[in-house]
Length: 348
Length: 90
Image 1 (cartoon, helix red, strand yellow):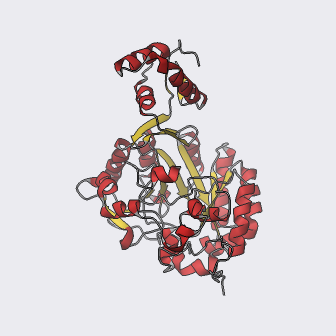
Image 2 (cartoon, one colour; image 1 turned 135 degrees about the vertical axis):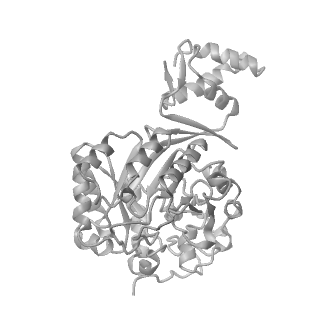
Image 3 (cartoon, one colour; image 1 turned 90 degrees about the horizontal axis):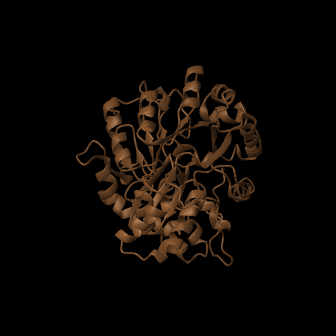
């Protein structure tokens, strides 16, 4: 139902990702935006506020704020307060390293603010090779500060081959903090392209993940595993690619992309600094018109699971050099009598 | 829901027109809802809490040249919206 409503796009995004800065004090090996160094031409405070004014006028319901490390912007608190006071809810992603007592107090008392802290394993031995030495400990300190204040935050984990077996531990860790676990799909975008083969879950793990998610309905996914819905009954969520239809990405220099996983010139729709601003990009950019008309074709259309997954994630296809009319490289549904072999994408 | 009481869109709920009808978002529940019925959307969007629901609905139907017989259908839909905490009583 929602697929039919949303496929051709909305007058404004339901939500969008705004990456505030490329600056980051960590160098995660799978970073989607290859972040590290702040760039000189990132949006100024005034430009950022004008952008938020546009979102408010278009009634964008909420923004997913990320980076880089968004808290590394000196105007972070000012901009977040500006957003919520203009009717735009905020969900921000952080590595947690900059959450001190004062920041935790602010988080716990600001309305319409959700926070997710990223860790990619249930222990430092699993997390730190991905996110950097000491990052597990520092993230946990932030979680303790938020938990002390009774704040219901999210723990966000990118599911990998290596941490898959720790999902139950991650779940228990979240419960222990009074927090909620959110798991997301590893995309081969940014630096993630270099490590995807090594880190991405095996096909068996993806199948097991589908059933694990079904058994843990309070684990959030941001709808990022909709390709797994091909296996059977759809997972919770819209189960569709929202790129350029219901979501998009604005990057730190104002470039607008179809989604946070497709930061590449082929999927850049425009820039908010151009005349017409964000609204014109959203409503008129030829690229967005294209994705709203686009439907994956090929063998997927004759698959009986097509209605559940619509051929999967464009970004994963793009960065693995998979043609768009081929199944998602992590498709776990193999129709009976299929001539398609299980593609061996296991780490070698 | 008591139609003789006054209702309006609850605090922390935003309604946005779309081609198919409207999207509703509850900031408290972080929940998205869909509305498809255009007259219902117009009525809900215009609820300002200035008069009892029953009166507001009568005026709305008269303006739209819609029969009073439509009232029970509206009331049923509005009752659902109140149960979802999209509408709140003043």
